[in-house]
Image (cartoon, rainbow, N blue to C red; front, side, top):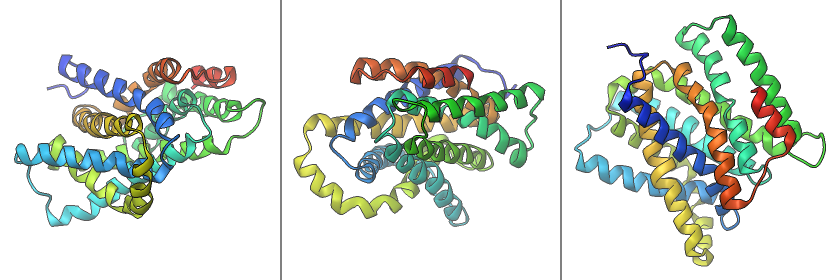
Length: 278
């Protein structure tokens, strides 16, 4: 089989993944009005852990081998804990659309890391694309305000983009050891454990949280936080990390549309210009 070919099942998986992850930005902004960033991340991935765990048990997924446990915690820490805490903290001050544009810089970083770590090829057009990507990120970072100024929240979201890139490149070396569902389940569990430090605050927040906010976080956990990650692992088994990550450039278009419908948010013209450049 040509592992670089995007057939119908893979195309459907990528499309579903993009839609689910694009919807997450608006859902996060909505839930941050009720939960603090750490509480939101913990609740989201407690839901994901329970749902994925139940499905894995029903499917009789293989247990992780002891030698793989440190790697699973590394992947969970980078791809779940760091990524989602950084994204949540950043979205306190950055609009959902602009956050999606910044996260869309992840393919640029992934291409660099894949070249260094996985020895994936990166031609002249790839280097030009990376240069344009950095220029676009700079415009978005400057544009998330009323004037040309640096937005700290944008830098925090860039940390999330970096962690997503590192996660994808590291993941590529290990995904062949387990089925996508099992691998995703163990990574989500490993990434959720460090966030248990936010449990006391979460329990207090849940007492006053409206059902609409709780349902929004439940959606985040089951679909963008659960199903989409399974689809990502499936995609990485079929495509090089840099190739799959390139599809993330399509996510901001969906995310901006969803944020406009849900939150009535419109990113600044400078952020949109940066997204077009990136």
